[in-house]
Amino acid sequence: MIRFDTLPPEVTQAMCTPMHQILPPAQNPSNPSQYSGALFLGSLSAVMDKDLLRENRITHLVHVLDVPWLPMSEQEGFVGYKIAIADQDSEDIRPHLEAVCTHIDAALKSGRNVLVHCHQFVPRFGARKSQGAAEMDGCLCIEGVSRSAAVVIAYLIRNQGMSFDNAQSFVKRKRACIKPNSGFMRALQEWETAWRRPNMLRRFTT
Image 1 (cartoon, one colour):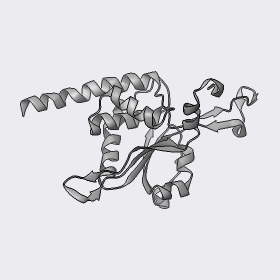
Image 2 (cartoon, one colour):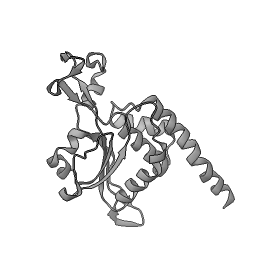
Image 3 (cartoon, helix red, strand yellow):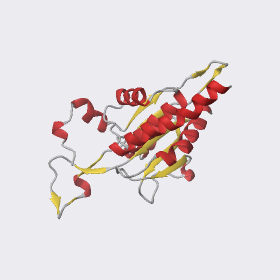
Image 4 (cartoon, one colour):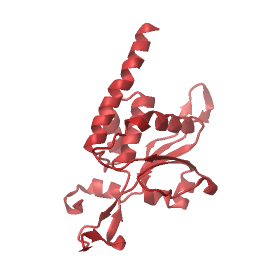
């Protein structure tokens, strides 16, 4: 269980913030009238707040969830992309990274704003448990910490040319509560090495 009384204030505040902007819109150097979209990292509470999504002109939602339902649908005007994966050290996120990075990049290049989110219900600090399970009204919805953060870090590595260390530090400066689980951390480091190797070979042979 997360002990909120032991967390730094900036981490607690980030956890209670629905979402953070990771990359702002960027002007196209070859066409100054065109801008790429913005990339956001956040929580299920952000996805459920339609006013917040409209205010930030978010049209694309990347759901990193291990549940059978989706909080928003295409019928509501959003383009959804789902990665079904649990937040466990034993889960391998690598098979999903190439496709989701391509999806995010295409949306951003078309000028669309993208929110990547996950979710996890954890007991509120001090909440009583009943038979080992916390009641829903005694839970705090905390997300945008592990799975979705791993996806955003992967995007920065693949499409922004950052190293794993730089990408992780960059995202943490934007959303202080991120903490991909140890399995995702290892997977991202291995994926970065595997992804960079053929690109380095192409660079030297062309």
